[in-house]
Image (tube, rainbow, N blue to C red; front, side, top):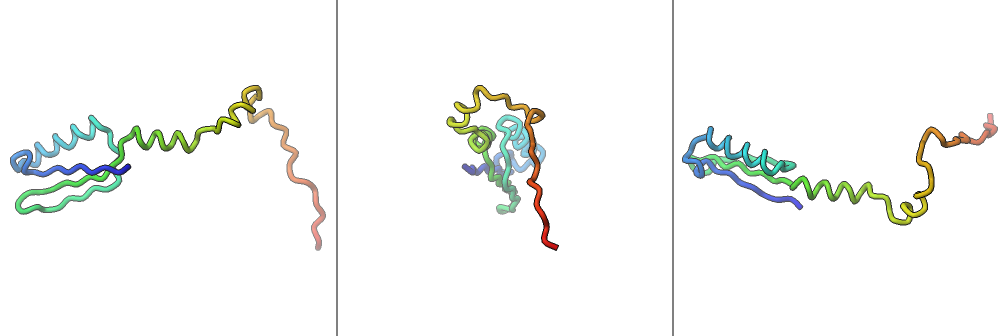
Length: 98
């Protein structure tokens, strides 16, 4: 789920240096995956807008995509999954019509 976070220089008394510190602290604390960033004037102030995802949400979604369905888990429990042990018969021979 996308989330929104906005920062305004009015929050820090118009000091861009302090705004930078506040944004950096938020990024270090939350570790957001930023999808969109916009900077816009708001009167004599600057507004920074972030659209982001929480890392835990994207990690969970990725884990669901690569998860092995339970039916395969049951059937593969006793099998050795070493790709070097596979006997690749290759492609069957075929006559090409020339």
